[in-house]
Amino acid sequence: MDITIEEALQSFGFSPKEIKIYLACLELGTATGNEIANKSIINRSTTYDILKLLVEKGIASKLIKNNTTHFEVVGPMKLIAQLEEKKAKLNSVLDKLKVIEERVIKKPIVEVYEGHEGIKTIFEDILLTKKEVEVISTSKIFEVLNYYFPNYIIRRKEERIFTRVIQEESPKTKEVKKKDKNEFRKTKAIENMDINSATFIYGDKFAIIRLVKNELIGILTWEKNLAEDQRKLFEILWNQAK
Image (cartoon, rainbow, N blue to C red):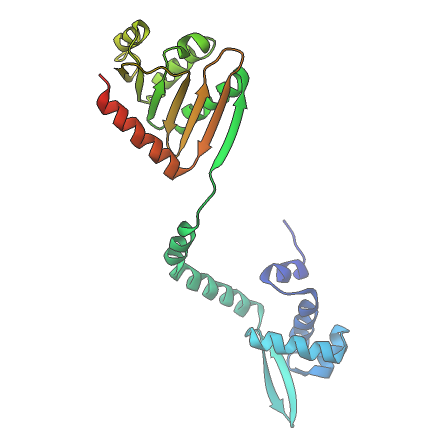
């Protein structure tokens, strides 16, 4: 993509008036403030103010000739060298900057999905993440999501995404257990777990799906620490389940 000299200098950090002063000075070589002001068509007061800024930035320098102050600017290759120097300095403290960034409390990303298509979006996200999945669910999921859930299991198996599942003690859970090896899963049951939802924990995310026909709602939360808390709760239940 072709860009103008002015656009290139602007990307370096020059203001429009600084560009005019820099180009005038570059063309004149060594010149007085008055000569630079005339060349750039900028009034003398503003010209001297900008030249002072360019000197402070290390882009211009001043020297005395015949008892008169003259100015000159660095060439384009030195501008590039300055950029490389700044880049090297930034790289030298990059790890420290990352530590500071990680101290900032980042707000969780929370997304709400409704209906069959919305819940399907959550399962697609699980498959795309390709991380092991921990699940706390009612076995009603096979009934309420019979339109899609079996297909999800097939695709999860194909993607070799292992899952651990905790469900209530029930005939359906016993049936699920029998298929564990074939469906790349480990299922445990826990007594007296009467819930109407399913929680899927994967990567830095977890999704809670309300399993009520015609009132399907899924809440997907993306936040590492919250996901880890959900995972810890899962482990507590996992150690109690059979």
